[in-house]
Image 1 (tube, rainbow, N blue to C red):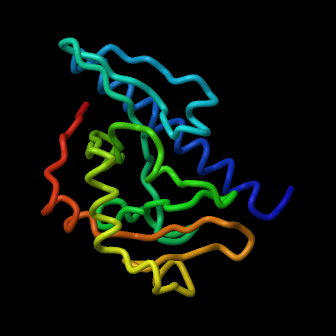
Image 2: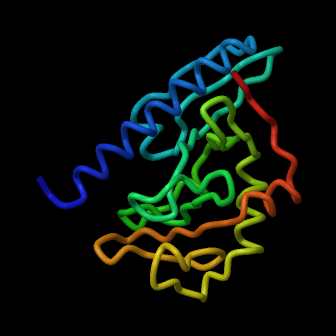
Length: 170
């Protein structure tokens, strides 16, 4: 098994679990849930659609993340954002989803307009400052040596202070 295969499988499992929770919470709140086609998930960064009261929005759902592999979750204080994906193409930040839903706890998601998140990241992340490790990637960009991704961490409280999220709960 390649060195990253185990962590990739774990990350994928956590992502699918977050999507299942998001669906469960949304349906309990009276939203109609529609899963996106697999190609949209990959190329447009759209996991699903929620509809209610004649409004339909597309969502990219993000599971809790760690600062570094094996560490405790950081999502309660910090959020990972992706400018470019592992293939060097546009990351989910520049995808086509209307909304980004970050898993906040096992019982809630914070939902932001993707465009607000883009504005925040372009203003706050110094894309000329390159972090040497994930621990140093707060408001700096980081690229893993075996990939073409460009990612960064932002403070959750800073984002919430600028853009009030919608809360989706159990």
